[in-house]
Image (cartoon, rainbow, N blue to C red; front, top):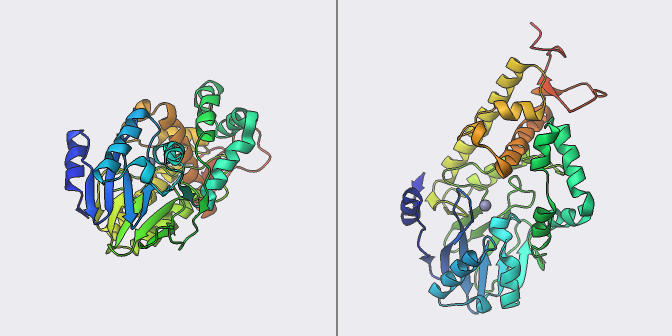
Length: 358
Ligand SMILES: [Zn+2]
């Protein structure tokens, strides 16, 4: 891997904010701040051609974020009103948060993959039962009631999700973003979310990787209560998809730009295999275990005690995704059906009460 966004990496290491940068004719990166997050900023991309101007991942919806986005547009010789369209790699609030405000300001379109639109719609269908459903899912993972009460979705979170923009345009794998004069093609990379998109800018051979592949951290791959497809298997397949863009410069949504996508993919594949082996070792030690028990025993970069709030919720979803993947691959088993209480996983061939049969 070779870092190409050296000013971004210097800023990352110095814990400052990277500059707005022009990467090639009519393409800029703009850091938009994320409040209270170790990620600190989203790298928003501005892509222009003729009278068209597309914003990819406008960032988190705060006034500071809006000002940073507007400053980036000014640096590019434009303004929010000049934007013709918005593409989001996925609907997480650090990417899609500002889309509604930007669309109001410019009257343009919002585009995303159909599976992201479906995720937004799923929140709408949940209505007032969202918290009850979520508590039931957490209980099924073995999370104690008092802990679950602090982790389940709240009305406030739900309201923020429901305020986010619905799409005007759906982009499927292989579709071109509507930007006449520039070929920006959607590459479907499910895993981090079901409809995550990377975007390939063909003339400059640039791959906007969203959160799918970042140079330093591994994106959260979490099993969600109503996941249609197991996310880890999808993510591993999507990594192979972007490894084919090894000659492209990677333009991620966080951290810094780099070359060497195939190398980075190999590192991420190895990371998930190590994580799977760690889960198996925990089950070997522990005997049958719930998602919650496995979550607490997994290693976390800052230690389990510092994994709190939203991070704790993401950790549970990540452990659940690995357990589900190992069960789907036949490497571990779920407890016999009909068992009361939370679901448990165990090694294949293990006795119901404990360690492996010798
Ligand atoms: Zn993100």
